[in-house]
Length: 244
Ligand code: NAD
Image 1: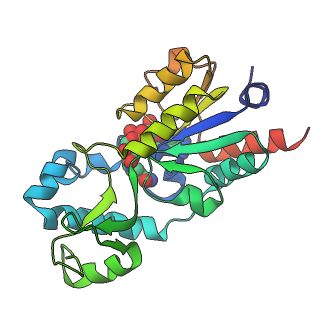
Image 2: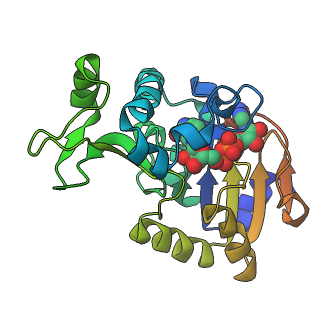
């Protein structure tokens, strides 16, 4: 069976995306040889303890990422998923990405389980600031402070060592348990608890399909496995499903 046949016969589909869907928008992933971790040690830049120890250093890293992320545009893969949602094939997109590209591509139901770079919040008083204002603040200050109380803001992304937003994770789990199919796109399926979603889908009787340019631990359990670029693969899928 190919991906289009599987998606037609196993509706509704829930899609789980990772950094690999956004590499064609110019945003590096984490684990590929050209990914972010080849340049930056995650223990120094992406853990909550690193942030508490040296927030300015972590903000320097995020400032670089903000720049790349705010320049990026949705690619053919993001657009195809939005089209598949409008066509009634995709119920929702659960994403580990913080780049906001699914929403900008037109997907209506997007669950951002690792947060987003749209905003940063004050750990002390809860004040929230928008990305656009933050980028301005970063020009003068490596660790932007809260406009209300002065405490150093934290980007609203989930860092290693932090819990995922409970509501988002519960919604993702509930969606995969009631899906006919889980389609994973551009994720190494190595970051937990999100990497356990395929198990939950399979246990509930859903089919699993994977589009990823590298092996994942779930490849043996997938009914369809495509080792190809997300953009062209999803564009071809949307085109195949556009005709009755
Ligand atoms: P990952 O880096 O572990 O895995 C990405 C996978 O995508 C790799 O296996 C890679 O081979 C594959 N890939 C790369 N380009 C592809 C393409 N064009 N088509 C198909 N496959 C492709 O990423 P992950 O599983 O998402 O988990 C790591 C964490 O990365 C997540 O917590 C996420 O928040 C964070 N992250 C997000 C962004 C973003 O928001 N765009 C970017 C980097 C990392």
